[in-house]
Image (cartoon, rainbow, N blue to C red; front, top):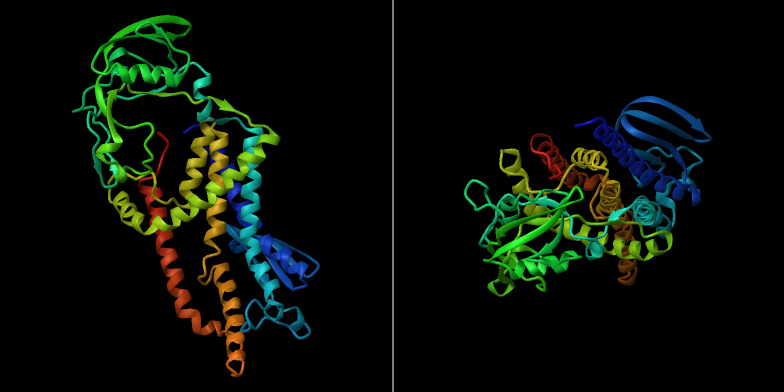
Amino acid sequence: MGWMFWVGVLVFAIGLILSLALHEAGHMWSAQLFKMKVTRFFIGFGPTLFSFRRGEIEYGVKAIPAGAFVKIVGMVPQDDDVEPGDEPRAMWRQALWKRTIVMAAGSAMHFALGTVLLWGTFAFIPFSNAAKVDEVRPEVASISECTTPKIVVENKKQVVCDPATSPPSAAKAAGLQPGDVITAVNGTAVTGWAQMSALVRAAGGKSTTLTFERGGVSQTATVTIPLAEKVKQDSDVETVEQITPDDIETVGVLGISPVIPKTVAGPGAAFGLTYHGVIDMVQGTFESLKRIPEKIPLLWAAIVGEERDPETPISVLGATRLGGELVERQEYAVALNLLVVLNFFIGIFNLLPLLPLDGGHIAISWFERVRSWLYARLGKPDPGRVDYFKLMPLTYVVILIFGAFTLLTLTADIVNPITLN
């Protein structure tokens, strides 16, 4: 790990802390907009390193940089921090729509930040654009060590080949290296990846001559292209568990991956890409939340020594480590995209209707309103506000579950972290 890795770790960690601070700032600014009383805004937790006061708000930084918090007077009716004369400014006394906006403003800041970062990435930072792979000559990015003749799925993953037992790939046998540019297959000149791939797929089981450039020098190699099972290119299979015999074809496989060209969309085109990107982020976040229960056993398996599934959840520590690796490899667009993913995930997660999350406070506020409306229709007296103290046991259970899950991901990221290939 070079010094660029640690620079990436530091920059990514700062980005995470700032995004969490903006979350709390969203609560604070919206509360101030509605004349609610805000008394504290701190970045970090634990002992105070320094603080200062501006008006009625104390700002400061604490020793543990694990987030931020804001104190709004009277967040719930049971709060005893409302001083005489401040009752009209207590949060729980405000209109329902105002309280809803204040509690949702934190997540809104994550969505806004994620959207701006996504637009900036598309507008100004070169990113890998697979749609343009046929616009450049087919350059080799990586070489497969071996070839798997049959598709085998175990534990919801496609089994990869084992160099010790599987036959070597044609690319390995031909001596291809990353950076080589394929210029012809059996004498047919190729100018794009799709054309080259089609020729290789059709050459399965046959002796094939590959022409390639390395360092500006043209070279040739003759090798037999092995036949192997692959998912059809026009198949709509999304996960390996969905593969059926009808989705499989047997074709020639060379065993290389392409260099994906990088492109910059520009400020104008970035708006359309950002729109579709935001939709993908939201859909992906809900899909990730839905699949968390099935990932817990895989996290435990990674802790006890099994291979870490790259699709298992990661902690803030794991995300920061990946951010450092991406910066070290100069994959700045991917690093920013990871920060965008985390912002959308945190924003949506915080809106879940569970205490102590923001969504839990919003759900209780609306429950109170619906209950009051229903009691009025039934001619019964208004039951009043929900007693948060009665909900504390349930809140502690939620905190315990979240805490255990956080500890699980953190442990996995320490003993068996996800790393880039």
